Length: 231
Image (cartoon, rainbow, N blue to C red):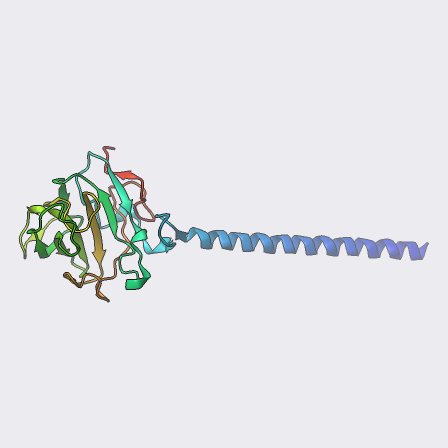
């Protein structure tokens, strides 16, 4: 009888031990899965043809310093973003954005600053590398916004001008190697880097961008999506 009681106690302790062990293992597995989910949530791939990037590198879109570089009203299609990444130039164009728009579309200063470079002499449809029209604007923090592939004669500002956010500064075009009319917009770390040295480091490295008038864009604009329509 005593032996039977001892056996029952031993079995009870064993069951408790197994239960606690299984519970602990399950908790560890859940914690690992939660950590992995958090880690994965910190990464995003806005462009399916581009690499994964860190979501935390992007400013909150609601309080972004930038607005879309075109007038609100007509939705504009984003062609490419992070697929500009090219390991051959150390990925300087990672955060560049290509936006489809007809020749002559008014472009706005995405952020206030000083005009530090302009080019307006190239003809639309020339399809020649490094022969594109542009405006470059230096911001208070030293970064450089670049508006590229502008229309022949489509620069509306002069070198040295101070422009305000939302001010018309140019007309979009189809100069340089484009494939079709569009705006290439990016912000480089410093500069300006002028052709043929667009990608010279360290200034050539682009910075991640969000836009406060583009809805929720916590990992930047998404290719295949339209932005700038009437809300």
